[in-house]
Image (tube, rainbow, N blue to C red; front, side, top):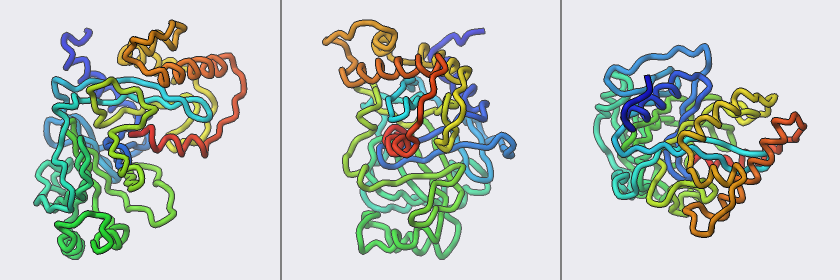
Length: 321
């Protein structure tokens, strides 16, 4: 039976994505993002409350659909072809979180995904993001003392002792938005380390300074802000961005989602329609849609297209937000 209301339709989308082990998730803003994914054979624990989501030994996701949550499916052009995702957006007028600009102690994390973590002390890192609070959580006395020593200062202040100790402490990273949270338990990689194959976070000061909520390449409708995203399995890349044989089934599956949740004007352009100057879609996004349609047609014809994975990874940092 088809969902009878928009909220039910969005909830059904979230449930189906959570059930798919090939789907990854992100929650964050431009320059600060938490990602959740799991392995096919990884043990999964249900959440102890009514939120949608799950926890593993490496991380957790907990979602609370709200009436004004709007999924926006999209594709963006990259060096080897395209990325795709479904942004989970809220109206700009109602998406705001705390906007703290300094490290702030918040007390026990009573909404932690796992009951065992609810006595851990939560600290907002003070990144002053519009729709996301980027936090860390720990129960370790030494780590708590270190974090408290940096309270009241910007995280990237050279006088703040937290930055020098964060990797060694490796507290849980907890990213919060009105749509839910992602928690990462895996250790923070050291300088120059690669992202682990599982839940992880990125905090990139250079991108944070732009003040953007999302990359310019991401076609989010005006007045809406992406707080999180669903990342269904990609046709020619695995979760780590490594090249795989083109999977036409994965491609077809996302096109169904794109047709259901994508921007109608952008879809029309992708399918050969004329771009109208009065359209809500920018000419930049329209050009990208045409390019994506052309390269997807080449993949579907079985042409061999070399992938520039390194360039893809550079662009994906921006696309993920």
